Image 1 (cartoon, rainbow, N blue to C red):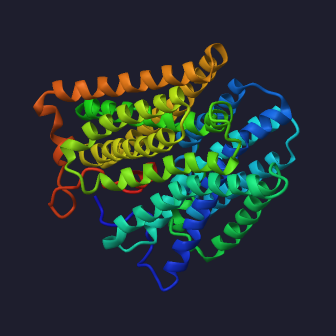
Image 2 (image 1 turned 135 degrees about the vertical axis):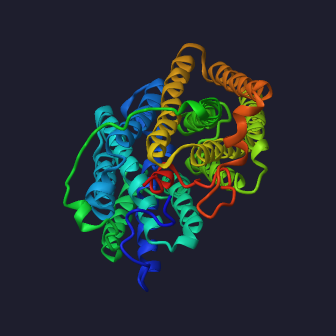
Length: 438
């Protein structure tokens, strides 16, 4: 495995800090645009007259768009370059924002969410790979941390500024999107400071679109599935919080505050980032058991909030769920990084995130059906019980697992220098591992 990403054409120059800042801004803005709708769903529901179930569908089509984009376009920046792919992602984000701002019916919202999903899929691979390309070999971990901060910071920042604007500024269904469009324009201009790091001879080969195959190497399959199920369960909870937090606050707590809705979801995303960072310092053998325990506790807290109609357990549950989700995701990426050959790593990471985003979208629709049939409290408590049961099942599998099946998961394989590779080293997202593949 090389010590530098495959796209590197030379050492970082003096302009590298500005270029990294521009890439991080593009990443942040694109991801922020995907969560701007979160505090606004109740307003759209009132304006267009659709049901709580349809709110969950609007959210789910975004996640499905991400899965399709990752599998079909995840390697596009390796073929045509980082800059054009990042620019395309920003243009898709701008188109989605424009559709949201002009929306006068449900189809507009659904189309905008699909575009947001494609934009998020493109920027995740291209921006993370670009940040790794622009970093010196000894600073790659710092580059991954910057990618993680831009990714999760964008998800948290979008819902926060949208909620604040919707609550205390005028035109709540217009102004957040105007701000998003302005930020997207600034990010597009900033890309002019980013050098292209994919060699011209590679870019000359053109586009070769094909779906990334979904495969799990047999030697890490048990560890992969445990981490994917745990991380996917946490993703599902985050998806439900994103889709129906506003409904819960308004109907159960009688709190009609869009900024508070944004805060609940922002806490979940920020905690997910912290959870991924924790994997770097926790003993590898304890990360997944702690994640499972956190998922059970988070489910109990969220169910308690629903049953008692109190805010504090909901806020704490969002934080605990984020920490557990991030820890499970970091564990899964560490397992892939330490136990899969470089030539198979890309497809394994794609499979991992396809599972996560599928579990982000499908259960959300199920919760929408439950809410429609039984009400918010019953549907939410039932969902929380299912998440807790799944986490307990994963934990039980950890207790029963054969000792010999945990070698790569617990200790990692040697890194380029012969020292053990820390589990969870790739915590920035799917493309952090993809960038190391060649």
